[in-house]
Length: 516
Image 1 (spheres, rainbow, N blue to C red):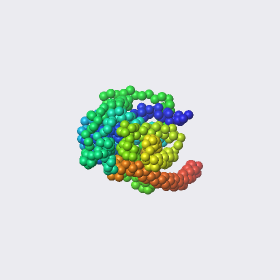
Image 2 (cartoon, one colour):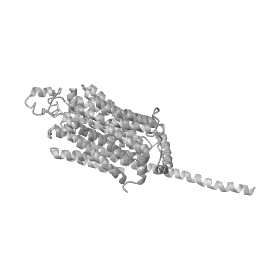
Image 3 (cartoon, one colour):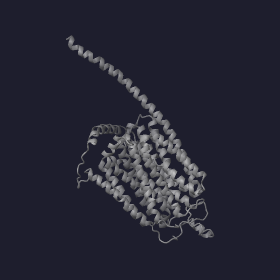
Image 4 (cartoon, rainbow, N blue to C red):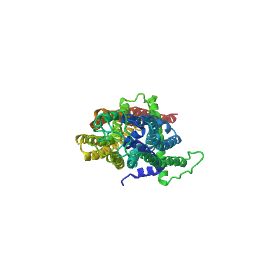
């Protein structure tokens, strides 16, 4: 059988919860991917320069980081977790609907900041809930969870593509300090206009933009997600005015009830002792972390740094590959370059789908090693064949494929190392969000000052740093394993004399009545 029956039974038992958490990650994917292909139309809509519109990425990712950092406070009860997911998913639909009304970059940045905060809450709660439900079997379900990010991120550019402007309103002057270059021929013989385009955008040349229809379509597509969360709250009898009907367990679920209950209470005790999966601030303030080895903390730090780098690549690549495609030496038509983000997210979707059976067959650490090495080789090949349009599309697909499962694999790997103690989930989610925020702004600024080739060079450097941090994580994993082995031996040596003393005391107690 491809999947263990125990895994299937676990899924059946928690199917409604699992499917709901997967669906909210579809909302996350929708919201994270639409900025890349629509950034030029949004630049026209807000009458801003590219350097100004780039800060919209920062606003979204910064608030995503804040939402990820404090999202753990909503996991205290099932009601608070589901209520937070419902409000967050509904907020994303509302933001999609009002984006066409944002006629300046400040309003757009505020809207994206609100959506980023909602995304951060979704990211933390959904990951924590699945890890809490499935524990050591969570790797398969986390891969599926992050597949839905890729699925939503794939749908978003495909919806936007038919409504993208043919020409945009940015300009291309041949000046390597300008990022987005669309009207290459328009200003080639006009130095005065070329000077002005660095200060502001040109009026839209292709008529009124229709990209607002794409945002309204995405708002409607996302609307069933908060309704699904609301239905789960109804099923769990968490809506006071609408009590639901208790669900009966089948025989397989009943057979697992006692086993899962015992494991769950043990895990709850461990979480209480070492901070559990709360928000990152409560983790840092936990008094029970004192006395733990350096390896315990370094696993958190290095795991977070790996995701800081790899998720930073995902954010930067998805955000700027379209911009890179329309610039020399590629100089692709806008519509053709618009397929690059879709291909990237399609690869991430396919990779996460493929990783579901692979995570069942292979240890997360092996998948991590393979994916990190593959990402480095792919970016290196993109650097070598930087003038090849064909390899740009092929490399974009391979890059998305290798980066796709790094986050869920790292989450499963570190939680397993730490025996589901500590704050690995909160630290990793926060680090990933911080990486996307920082790398998008950093890479965008470097492209603007150094030219388009620096886009791939930045990706190569970031990927190499990620691999170095991963090697460090492997070393501290070994140190932590040796520490745990030594602690177990010491506790066993302490228990043996106590057992011998109890054993010798029992015969003496039995002999006393005989002497009397």
